[in-house]
Every structure is written in C-alpha cells, then in structure tokens.
Image (tube, rainbow, N blue to C red; front, top):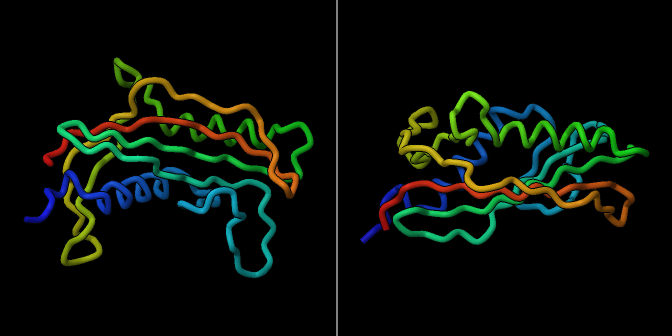
Amino acid sequence: MSLDPTARRANIKDSIKRYFCSVYSGELTFDKTLSTPDLLNDKSVDRWVNIDIGEVTRGVITTVPLEIQCASRQDPEGFKLAQLTDTMVGHLSDTTQTDGMKRIPFYRSVSTGPDDWVLLGSFVVSEEITESKELYAPDNSKYIIIFATLKTASKI
C-alpha cells in the first residue's frame, strides 16, 4: 500500500523548495549546511540562504521543522546578514492573517507533467520563529540560523 500524497516526504520537500524559490530571488541552497553556492563565471556571492528540513513527525498533523541558515561574507558589522535574516523571517509570517501565521502551499509534486502540480493544502508556520545568535564559519562568513515549524493535515 502506498502513502497518501499528504504523507510523502518528497511532496513536503518539493513544496518547501518551490515556495522559497518563488519568494526569494537570491542564492538558495537546500540541504547543504553552510557550503557556499556553486556559481558559474566566478560570480562573487556575499550572501546566501540554505534551507534544511529537520526530523519530520508524520501523523494526522504532520510536523516539519525547518532550519534556515542565512549567511554573509565581507560584512564587517553584520548589516547584510541582518537584512537577509529579516527578509527570510518575513517570508515565514503574514500580517494579513489574524493569527499572523503564514500559509505555504503544499503540493503533490510527482505528476505526469512539469506544470501539473496538484494543490493538497497548506503548511502553517506555527508556534514561534526563533533565531540563533550571530555565528562564524571557518572561512569567516557570518550566519544566523532561523528555526521554524510547519504543520499540515495529513493521512497516514
């Protein structure tokens, strides 16, 4: 027996990736910890974001922890890092909602064609969004980790 689409990790990952690629136009990596994005033509990158999915808890309500690592380099006072962190937290909140919690579309991503994604529901960014202090990588890049939890109804 196969899993319901609402309980598939592939759909969770693809939906999260689709959302962040649609709202953020800067350099994004997924599941690569703090590695600098590989770029063509020796383009210099002074800020980037990595998105990691944590330990998923599947159930009637599936819980998906996110770690969003915002990183900058050549940023003596951390101003670029602060701006980037604010931008990413902004993508996790929604002041137009009465509860302030962002809804992120949840899709079935495996289909017959590339434009044939089926909307299954939404992830709700729940609870608090927390941030680490400013940290330093071995190459002197600065980074802050944003922790958020997504929840969605599912059938398991």
